[in-house]
Amino acid sequence: MESVTVIVPARNAEKTIHLAAQSILRVLPDSGRMLVYDDASEDGTSKILERIARADRRVGILTSRANVGVATALNTLIDAAETPLIARMDADDISLPWRFRHQLSALYRGDLDVVFASIIMFGKKRKLVQPQAPFAVSPDASSYELLLVNTLPHPTLLGRRSTFARVGGYRDVPAEDWDLWIRMALEGIRLGRVAMPDLLYRRHPQQASANKDWRSAHAAQAHDDLCRRLIGVSSSGAFAGLSGPSAEPFELEAAIRLVDTVDRVGKSFASFTDRLSMRRTVWLAKHRLNQVYGAQV
Image 1 (tube, rainbow, N blue to C red):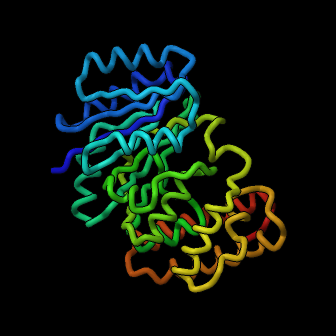
Image 2: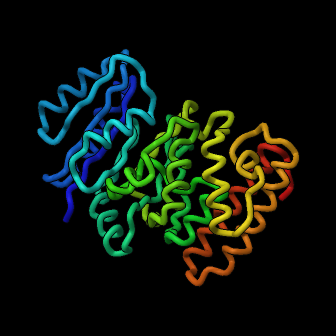
């Protein structure tokens, strides 16, 4: 089985990085590696990482004196990795014990290039524990889902390192993960998601998905290209309506039309699990439009 490198960007993560690292190292194969990019942390993150690296030879640390951001940190880590497979992890999440055994099996069995997993979200309060709907999705259906919502949790990624080079890696745009998945889908890279949760995902207000707007001309163009590829027409501004609260009326109308189109396509998939996942994705897109704009879709 091919070796894997887990890449972890970290900034001011002294409260969570030890638990995150231990959760990975307990299940990482002996041939695997964990590479952490300490992005100019101003707390005790670097000292904790040094202790972890001294205790486990599989851990490597890259550091920066200036804050470079997530996209640059991830690209640097991918360039530094030497294994055929790359996995992702955030510095405040927890990988579950069966993660790699489960995902590696799915990668090979499903002939996938990149595999994601469902997650269990948690926060400081017990009532915030919330499992994601446990739906698997195939490469064919995942491309359509990406037209509406990013349903592929970034820190659960496990895939072939070569796929990142094919699309030029991460771009420094809002929601850099959604943008990357869309570009991968455009290249015919096979993206899938397994139903079983493989990660505990910590929610906090600073996450991009909790912030204001994901507008980006580059990401919008990639979205439009994928829309043309899959349904044969331009998305005509739908990305602005789906990704941020400041869309113009015509962009909101385009988003609603696209949701309806993807809904019709989703009902035609032969796989029951794909149809189920697509139904959930359409509901998520409609819920967001209703929540942000008050649009009754």
